[in-house]
Length: 418
Ligand SMILES: *Cc1c(COP(=O)(O)O)cnc(C)c1O
Image 1 (cartoon, protein in one colour):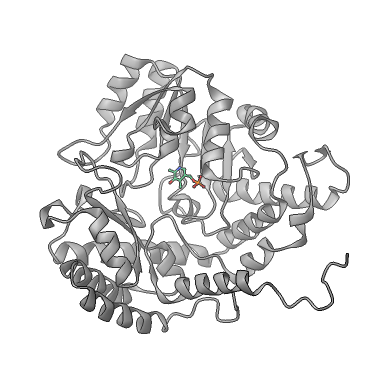
Image 2 (image 1 turned 180 degrees about the horizontal axis):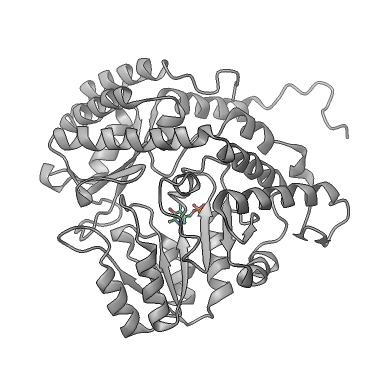
């Protein structure tokens, strides 16, 4: 059977879905803090012929033939990751952030061991010990959180819990924590009780890469990340470690957890790491921070309470309780207005995970589209007027039209059909 059948006309029902998704990305405002838009070049690389290649193992030690170029590719990606983050070792094979965490934990601790991670309602990720995650099922999870008064991580509690629980592993890092994390304090707590320290920088890796957020690399035994959030690469995972953990990490990724690596995605990660090493990546990340700071100011000016009072990062967390709104209501109203964001639990939230009292908003994706601070003023206006008219579908529809017109100023993938 030939590769492209003679009269092949494409797959219209499939392409229609892809076209609709491109349309959605183009004419809505993407404010999910964990999302971004890759460059057209990275998209192209992610679709390369490396999708055809099996390369189980690591460079120069594969279980398949024909891996000479896969080896070159993976070595290049590894060296870029080490350089970008000043790390001793890099593993670029993890399919996602969650499997990167799984490999990191498996490299350091055994089933049944106590671990100490951040409470999900306070900003932690599922894989930091939630009962529905492998992390909560395989290990014995304990949680720290933020202080009720400042909504900053309670470092005294981290130390107190560490001494009480004697965890084998402490996990720092978060998905909805708007502030800088003090990694030195986590290292101190880990050293006090002989625990290993994993820092999960999935959200803020792009900021770390450009020196706009403190690097966890000097403090953590293993650093895990996604490549698709602020780092602006393809959907995937990344693990950095001290040399002494290199073999344990590699063995846990393959054969511990995964089979063949996604070489086409490793190629796209390599391209993304290359982009991140370019000088203008720092301009991008600086703008991400400026835009988020402006959004925070505008939301606060409009009377919205921000968890921790503001942000140091690419995201803010809005407390909707004073406005008598739930996160679910806010998410739905914003969606009708053409703004994509997510409801999010806030510290000490009394609502369920499916409802929540918070709204998480991020600036990374819209900054990639070219929005600057003054554009974020307009975005904040859209958000505030949508939230003030939660139940008015006709009004939300009018905002939707204005949003659509607004997005046309910031073309997304103008040369692509899907
Ligand atoms: C997004 C995220 C992950 C998981 O990434 P996936 O690629 O979705 O598995 C892990 N940890 C943190 C802190 C995250 O924010």
